[in-house]
Image 1 (cartoon, rainbow, N blue to C red):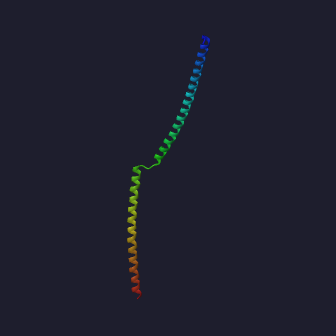
Image 2 (cartoon, rainbow, N blue to C red):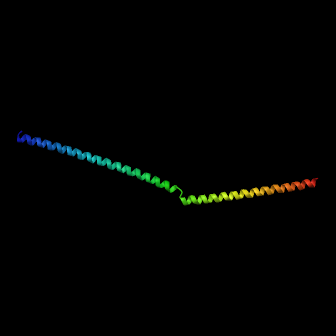
Length: 110
């Protein structure tokens, strides 16, 4: 191999290596761009998910609110039971009065 042929061969090898390194660099830039886009999309999705959870938790009742509702419900149940008892007594008294009045009327008519 002559010096000129060796020089040309080495120049071709160097040029080929440069081309390969350029291809690798370009491929790495493309991969980086795709990764950045994927990360941005992931962050957007994560933010939407986080906002949805925040909205959901804002609409949920707290333990204190549920305890207050439970207390009010128990009070209403007690009040209804008292009212039912009072109505039962009132209906019994009314029935007894009608019975007494009916017996008085029957005795007066006889």
